Image (cartoon, rainbow, N blue to C red; front, side, top):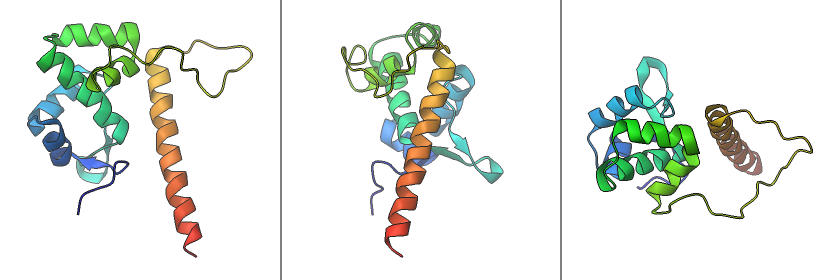
Length: 139
């Protein structure tokens, strides 16, 4: 039975989906600070859907577009994790004109890495909420 699109993936499942060996994913974690799978007891890694999207972008940039590791690091620093995920989908950059749902009156620039962490946390919370909602409906 195949996992759903929002299910977490083990390192073996992620490696198979991306077409790279598991040791490559572990190596990328050492080179790219933005690759942070969840780790459970014993160090077992679980990749969220957004992790897979970013990894797909890293793979495309390194293997298909000829970027170096330093080049991908610079691209992340300059343009953020959304640019990397877009590369994995074959897009050059996030879609122009797409505005976030929430725009505070006074925007605060928190920086790319902090924004990425918050985006991942929000996605995790939304997934947990959806799961809880489905469990509560089954009462």
